Image (tube, rainbow over all chains, first blue to last red; front, side):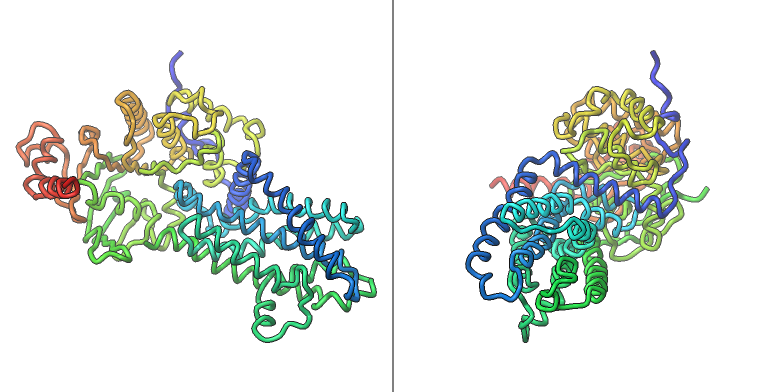
Length: 281
Length: 268
């Protein structure tokens, strides 16, 4: 049997029309996201970590706080902490997932990404959404651990939080892209992830109310997207309850606008830094 | 016919370097031409090819690919080129087919689907037939990390051609390949040029691979020393083979001695 001629087989575009510009960008974002999800599914370590994190964060840290700190508060601390931990997990796992931008540079796959004729935003957003996969697994783990600790949310509250989770992952990932845009190696990236995630947990009111923050801590809490994500999550969960005024800091619309604005700013800066770090040497 | 690659006064100075890696390089490549870029290590070959493929910024100069400016129309340039990198740029955890599918999606040739079976029949048929041609059928659904270096190189070439680029950049594509793998890869590239008229821009350390080039360009210390057909280069240097001509030139220029001295210095 003779081999087919190369003209019939070498390229697809001879017979296939290219996708439209918008579809190409969406297609590229989906492909980048699907690749990261495939990599996660093939990495037992990452999956195990995604499931172990809720046990540590919610079970050990959260459990300890509930037993020792909740008694003096005017509201139900379990729900307060559950929403905080849920958002924290989305941010933390998405940020950790973004480290694979460094891995891509190390194994030169970033070259394949960056020579593609698509917007750098499509690549970065695809990366963030791909990293969100393990983040959402972890956040589901938080709900399971919370349930085991006796903290329950209603089905509508759960659905609302689930619907908001991609936006929250995007906000967390956008901040991480800025860091990855200026870091060159994995060791430094691991340290920076800790540097980003741990202070955020306290400054954004994940486990401690921040209504009385002042000075520098007040300013820092207001420029972190996680503050608004946590508050929006609590606005959903505490809506219509007497504790709403004690727990929720901002109008949900204000939180949504702040999340969108901060995410957009971080995404623009991060994408610029990422593209520049690869090209400007 | 207008040139498909036009480079004028290209200069690249890396941020932490005192000297320019590429110093005022100018050349042009015609459509369908096989253009070989030769030079010793550190001559500026990879820097030039990186700028031409939009992966590295230039310090100054003008570069047009397929009529598009690499700074102002980088996206259009990327649509018209295919690249085989010096350092393989495959995802080793994905299978060969997944790498091809990813590339096809990034270039908008096909809408992405999560599995091979869900991709359109046209995609599936062509990937299978392409794999037959380059002899990687058995490896199509194996993780790339488990393929031999030769297979990975072939796969990279297949991948770089999926969107039918007008210009194929090959940056030392046969590095680390055995003689048989090199031969089969070049047979495939030759077929491509003949049947599709693809322009090939090659950098290589294997001088014999440039024997069949239409134009050979010698670059040394960031500047072009000579740009002409291989026969003319051999005649100019009074050499029988391109390799002899190349080595004679480097010796005359002092580059070979400098390289030997440098290596002896390191050894001592």
